[in-house]
Length: 215
Image (cartoon, rainbow, N blue to C red; front, side, top):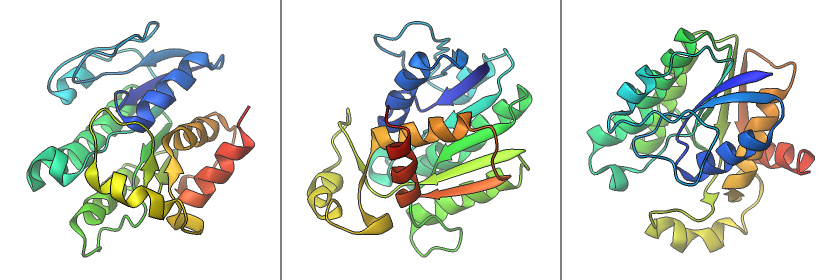
């Protein structure tokens, strides 16, 4: 039985993952700190604070597994600084909270093309986030790098709507992937008894794991 810490539970992947966790008999406790209250969810410890770091500080029960599904865009965030705070600082804060609470496995949603040396700002921030988590020396660290995510968002993203039909036709890692499949793959990986110290899951790998665990 495992205790879980989840951030990003109000987002596209995080919402699917939270509902899967609630149905999973091997999970016996879920802490999901958020900036706004979760809707229509029971059986979850949901500390709420406009500053997610302060909500994280309210979690004091030991956990075994940490999931971080935080993610935005520069346009949604409003500035480069706000984007870095959401996609780097808060991810690192989530990981540090998990370590404080005794977790041994960290799973994070990053992005295809993440690289600290990327010429693209979005991918560069994602890459630096990954490097920061690796520097924490987790017993197990799983990094998911999905392609364009498919699903119903609360906030409409114009670029995703325009590009989604194209990405559905692309091969391999470029092909878009359902947010539900990313969540299913993360859960299956978290519950696997064995794993490498650092595992990077491409979009294709995520799709394959989800297909094997689609019950």
